[in-house]
Amino acid sequence: MTAKPPDPDPQRTPGLERGGGVSPGDTPPGSAQTPAGPKDPPIPSRAIGPVVLVVISVMTLMVVIFVVAEVMNWSTLF
Image (cartoon, helix red, strand yellow):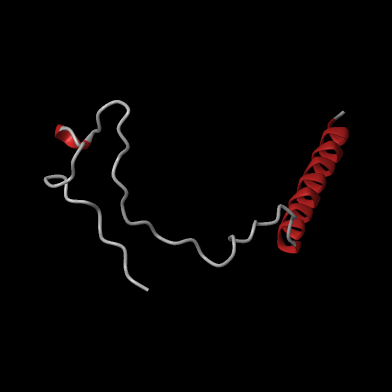
């Protein structure tokens, strides 16, 4: 297997204008590319992990306790 050449030299590539652009209708020169891996990368799941569920549950419980304590405190004032 032979290696592909690196990006073409702009000084010796026909069809390139100043600044590296190409004329309208002209095809830009090919360049070296990185080959794709054997498989696509795995798609991350959107499922909520057990740690997140525990954190949400604890925070919800704390909010409920706080609200109940405040209601009990307000009810004793009146």
